[in-house]
Image (tube, rainbow over the protein chains, first blue to last red):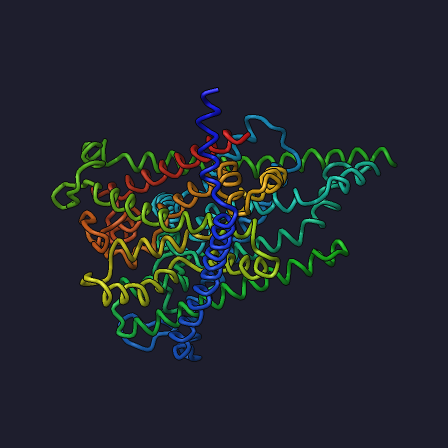
Length: 305
Length: 294
């Protein structure tokens, strides 16, 4: 009884009059609209500001030229090349392992200790700061294997860093495929593996590709994990080397390096130009992720996403 | 004929399962190797150089040339800058998460979602560069801070960087609530705002806790963006504009010049190991929060 009498007046007074409640509700709605819109405004302002800063730096000699150690006028050609080189190498390692592990977790594994440990490991890997992953790469590939700074070491480090994200993308894409498709395939006598490769994967391929391209955008801009594994330089006698056994400074690393370590006089120009190129690449990755994903879904399943 | 085919597909099936299991096992091996190797390397400060653990954690004198590697400054730096980021970015992110799940019309969602995805994609160094060219001069000219570098600049950059994580996860938390909760509250005459504050927020609390914890994890691990604006001074943050350093920024600042096997190098690996332990602890917290929900 006592409890009822103490609760009742409080809840009445907190509810207030209908008019006050309406005003509070309207105010809250307006505030939330303003907050959400501010994110879009802020992002647009960032993009405009960076285009304004970096536009004049984007000359052909900057985009395709080689970097300079001490004098002004250095370009970022080899850095752009290295960013793509390491990106492709990383995807070659990451995609098969992550997709296979994702299929295992989503389609095969039963709840149990093995699955629990895999999931805990993946979650931990996903939370590890990229600079810590970089130091692990330094220990394994530079100190232990004595490779020195190499594109391969960088790519393998990024593989560890991006495995969990790609596994999750795979799992989510697979879980979006309705069970009726699986049942239909099994009902016609297909084995589980046949069902997965011929029915489930084609239905999930659009979503998976979207995820892969978005993650590719992140790999392209990764920095902290590469400083200690792929190094801070490009081979000057052969800046466009195809070999994975050479130092490979990427564009994002170059932006950090030229700001904090290098002694060239035109740091601002290099920074503004590199930042703009990185931003354009991010926008391109995001755009193509949507387009490619939609196209693939349409082709493999005949339906629009 | 059919029997042969069936046997063959049965064999394919077995091989496939083995391959998939190996891939999943690789994740365990990678994590175990990382943990063991960093533990091995990260404790050398204590068992090779004989520097006491309590001094590493609680003293602030970092001078490897004179055998002092107290990481107190960097630990305090990481804690303060993370607190700053989560106090600013956390509520903001949850508010936008509510907006996306409860208020935003389709049109708005179609603009806001891709914008958030672009924010995730923007590289850490680009955020750092923006902070360096936009935020630091602003703080320098508008406040009493002489350089503009410091805690505030780093905290603001971080708050922006953790927004996508917090927004996306808190939106998921609200969306996963049963619709009957909201309908019940509205049917009792509550306004939408009352429903959000008194029904949805408490019901989604464990999901929101996960959003905040993973936001904190992101903030603690962020490196280059804040390294470019925090000032990299080995001093405790005495005010909101004070230049300082964090665990991650110290690693990146001093590692390129550290020689293998020195006390400085060992101390930096100890910091990396500490970051790894914090990351794993946060994952345990996430699991506890999720267990409460079910």
